[in-house]
Length: 96
Image (cartoon, rainbow, N blue to C red; front, side):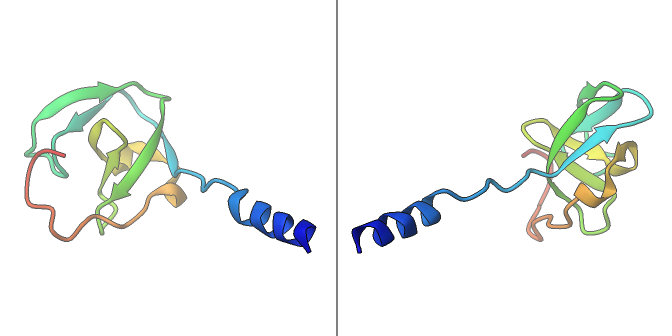
């Protein structure tokens, strides 16, 4: 009985980690912005070929938020299946 309990506990605590969605920058050094749109300020750039982790993308898949970085135009990202359409509906402006 004790062995069964230990095995069940191990099965609950040892679970595979969920893969984080990633994409690769393609086509140049892309602008990182403070919000999802061209009218938001540029706060940096990501070099061509860089693999990035995505937190979420806008509902229309036009803009994606790169983890700990900012918003980028999704048309410059390769790996469309990794883009998630889960932008919070209450996003109200610049910043993150």
